[in-house]
Image (cartoon, rainbow, N blue to C red; front, side, top):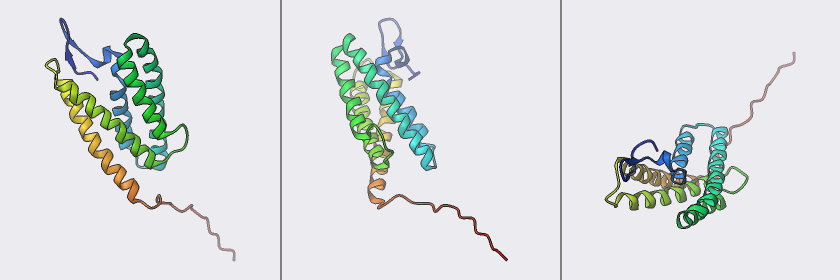
Length: 164
């Protein structure tokens, strides 16, 4: 997000300067935060963060459709696909894994195609590499989520007292 992405007229263009290109980077930040969680509560918060970025992407896509319709339509399609997968409520790990697979596939295609242009700079190449890594991680995560018959349940603590 803070590295030069493409060559501009007189200077390199950074993604932070163009808000319509921020959603892939924001999803990356949310996935990085999700990868650092070890608890069910942390996973629920990560899913909520993903929903928040998706809703922000929907709002941004509607504004982008007014300024640059082709880009806005693509962003709107991507945000709707993610929101349809992850849903408005609930915290299913399997749905979160499928949503991450959708996001990482679209980001890999986006940055991969962008990296093939002659204007691409270091930031685009690193983003394409990171997106490909997220795609592999999403496939592994989905495989583990499908293989798990049910989530691991930690029993509640019970205080036992002995009466004498």
